[in-house]
Image (cartoon, rainbow, N blue to C red; front, side):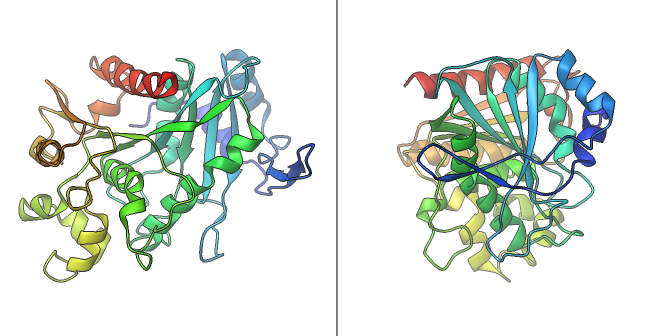
Length: 319
């Protein structure tokens, strides 16, 4: 999906990649966004002409080897003054087979559309295969980005940080489900001991049963994890959503009826197992929807995707 605002992307891509800190009245440092002063005029025009604000933050990674071109998040907020803790939060994780050809810029329109529904949207970029990622780096980056969310919340007190819905498409759906259950990991596993836990997850065409997906011929998973399930079983057991279900984590798995990249059965398998485990899980099959069109703002079913995420976020916010 490339139907994003080219002006906004251009502006975001040229921001000076230097992050400073300001201080609250109690003296605690809070992150400040990357400066937009060096962005072209059309970036400012896009923001000024819309009803949302957008800022970029660079997050630190566990190994200390941050790539400022990839270790960042864009925060989209509805314009205006909002009471503290009043804006529900969505964490957005893009897909692309865990590979570098597709990045978070493809989700700018998606993020804007959600922000227009009164949501704070935290659009995550991370290192991928071909750009310094893969296992375990990609997973460590996503964990670090989510663990940085409370810092962004301190800088933006209007965001309700008590609840957050993490949403991912394709590989991002797997990463989102994994991110929602990192607290179940052993201390020596990648992403363990999370500093911040989302309260619900929405997967959009995610490979939520990775072993079954591999058996069905998905070699993208094999490349991402560095082997088949019988070759690196510990990696699959650590990151495969169906092997790490938390019945206390509400989940929604949406899939396209015409998806031939990640067949709907792998989402259905996850939901069926989660229900057997006593979890709150829903499977939503979207007819006439492909792997790409499920996140295409021009697709007829995209409104339902937005509504599902928005309801999940607002319901979490109201308790």
